[in-house]
Amino acid sequence: MSRLQLALNVDDLGASIEFYSRLFDTAPAKVRDGYANFVVEQPPLKLVLMENAGRGGTLNHLGVEVASTDTVDAEQRRLAAAGLASRDERDTTCCYARQDKFWVEGSP
Image (cartoon, rainbow, N blue to C red; front, top):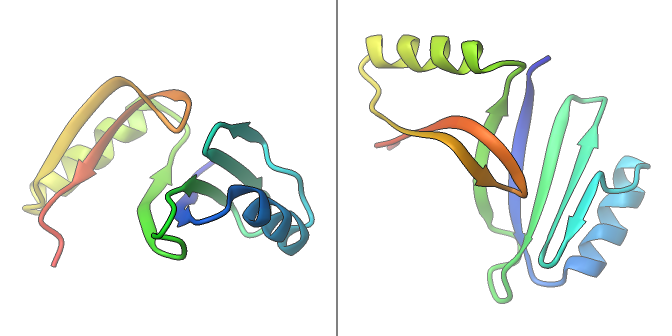
């Protein structure tokens, strides 16, 4: 399954957890110091909250989660063929999880 990942900076993690819990009618899937995420079934979304005082309400990063590393590899090849540069990150820790991913660079 693929789903959009939206990572937001928030000023107050506790207040944001309370707000998004009510908004999506679900509890966070993971909470760590300065971090929480929600796995929302409909629409398929992973909402990540990162506590960054003074930056609340701004975008931290936007991603697309996919089911396998093979899919990551295929998408990276497809985007390279389309002329989009990427920065590879394999077996890395991000958002308190081990991941294989890449970042598309040079967006306008």
